[in-house]
Amino acid sequence: MRTLTVFVVVAVVTAGLGRPAQAADIPAGARSLESVNYPGSYLRHGDYLGGIAAVTAASSPQAKADATFTVTPGLAGGTGCVSLQAANGMWLRHRDYRIRLETNTGTPLFLADATFCVRDGSISGSVRLEASNSPGRFLRHRDKELWLDPSTVNPATFAADSSFRIAAPWATGRRSPVIKGLYADPDIAYLNGRYYLYPTTDGYTGWSSSRFKAFSSTDLTTWTDHGTILDLGPQITWADSRAWAPAIAYRDNRYYFYFSADTNIGVATSASPTGPFTDPLGRPLIAAGFRSGQMIDPAVFTDDDGQSYLYWGNGSAYAVRLNPDMTSFDPAQVRTFSPPNYREGSFVFKRDGRYYLSYSVDDTRSENYHVEYATGTTPFGPWTHRGTILAKNLSLGIKGTGHHSIVMAPTGEWHIAYHRFAVPAGNGYNREVTVDPLRFNADGTIQPVIPTL
Ligand code: FUB
Image 1 (cartoon, protein in one colour):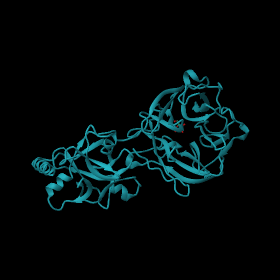
Image 2 (cartoon, protein in one colour; image 1 turned 180 degrees about the vertical axis):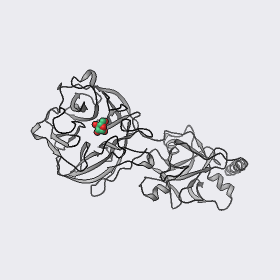
Image 3 (tube, helix red, strand yellow; image 1 turned 45 degrees about the horizontal axis):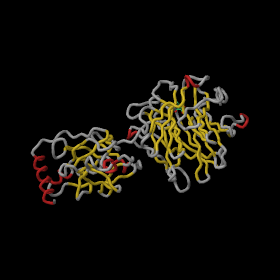
Image 4 (tube, protein in one colour; image 1 turned 60 degrees about the vertical axis):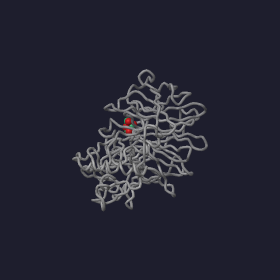
């Protein structure tokens, strides 16, 4: 076996050195990188370290995913430089000259360590990856491990060890948008052992969609499309358009679907989280003009005592206790908040006895649309502003990150669903939905979300 390996190494390197190298390039998107001198072995990660390993059609889905990376423009910039992102959102970077898989901390050092400039490989069609911040050091395999090494002795062997053929991806690379197509304003919930996403259907100038859809998943990765669950045209008598920003709630074996329609807020009910939903009121729950600003962007929080609260607003944030029927409230009890920079998209959740109010800032058509939050001791505050938790990342082409919702998994981990401009060519009317981890510091404050592709 050892003899055969050595023969393959020598044969490929010799052949390679005789041929002109091809212009170095790796097209963006999902790719697998095959070792030039170990054909059938691919660049991969395992236990958060880089290496190479054999992958075949019979390999496990995990092995295929570990050998697949999404190639993006270099996080640190640079012409002809790229970064490689794994399906879990982490990036290949070098640290202490070892190639590792780590979460983007956003520091200049991380961005540079995760950026490699593409050079010609040892044979036609292969490439080498030179560290953007360590010229002369290349990503190479050594004893099946990936290191960032300079060529010292035996340049031919080194060139082969650091050369990779760009192959078709063994698995799907980029995991987002999690629901394919143009959607925005996702409300995420965990109901009956499944995650559900209820978004705005996007892709219409002026946000003029009339239909709401639902999606569900067991793993936050593979989502089932349940189709249209409410269509304003035939189903709602008092509005036809601008079907925006829904929210789901559950009480006593019924599901309550709150939605914006022509800048009113309505509520529809169903026995199933995927509908069909019907309008029990035949009128808005909150009519346009009820308070200042647009009556849009409902969100529901249910406290440990079973009391549900409705939040909504644009320009000002409003909240009120819902009556037990979930379809009415006392208008005299509506509270108004003015958190700093508040625009819209309120969301409230509770963790370790503390209430969190998060919301969108700026205009959804701006690349600067982002999410800030505040904490309080009751569902009505008073609120202490804590700062930004989610914002654009231009090095990844991620813009307009906002209108979010938050869910806790059965494992106790938290996730944030939000929309961004569709990557790469979207805007405020062409948005897409993704989900990323939400992490907390020991003092209960929220760590800035690391947006991933
Ligand atoms: O999707 C239409 C509107 O854009 C939503 O109601 C706002 O929150 C903003 O995301």
